[in-house]
Image (cartoon, rainbow, N blue to C red; front, side, top):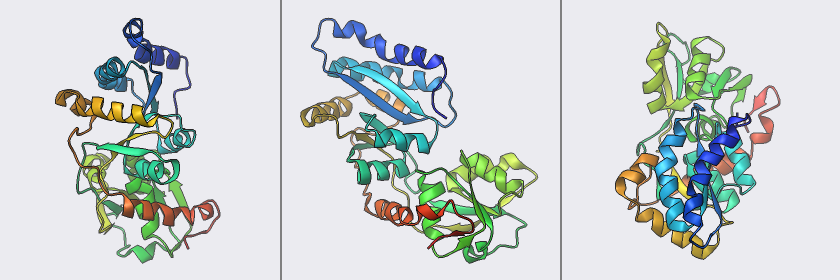
Length: 284
């Protein structure tokens, strides 16, 4: 789901035109659209980015527009359209943006540095090995999710599934397992810890844990932003007060993670993605 209702105009006006007074006495350098993924769809995202947008707009003499996407599918559409100038991207979206659409990483996001993808089953499930998912229905996350989509599909390579249910959120994926609609689901360890206890009396256990750590998400800058302006924006963001950077979740002096393996996982999964709509689903 994306902002399609009348409040959209209000939100974008609120986020963008607050910088109008700054432009009246300075040379206008053009608009910058900041893309973020906002799973819950709540308007608190406005407050979270308000000070950062104001700072960025003032320092770059730009009109700043915040554009939330409520799931990974919509985020990929915006990347393909080159619609986002800056993106606060989780790992799966970052890998797609870098590999396919020439976005450049600037800063790492604040996050869990040892995040891993897991398959979860009910505690009383007879399934004990990943290969036993053969012929079963599995719940995965949306296209673009590292822990819910790319890593699990990579690990399922060679298996035939009866069906895949694509859950809009990690909590929804766990719910499908709790309700018996899927035999297993893919989430991160952190998401299981956050949501797992909410389905009592159902208990979960980890069936499989991917041995690779998922890289931290990153702030990306788009290919349509002119090179000199990219460097200017990088410096402005690097020089931002630490509290301001922390508020929107990036590290000004952090090292950008290596995305080579993550991109190889995305490429492998993309090679079988055309088979996901045909049942049974042959993942090879």
